[in-house]
Length: 86
Image (cartoon, rainbow, N blue to C red; front, side, top):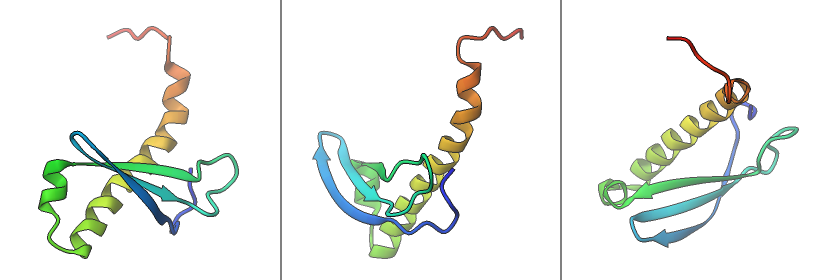
């Protein structure tokens, strides 16, 4: 999992058919962690941005979700292929 209070640099973006893919770089992600992180904003999300603060909040929320997912993935990956009785 990435270290807390990570500072990322906005590196670039790619305009796609249904939104924009943003690229962020983490200069010191920690051992075994990704330095490249991507956030996709839909056209509706882009249209909702009214200021730099709004954009920052939207991107931060999405990056935080990815960070949590990355830490959970290491646990869930162990379950892939196993049967679950419900």
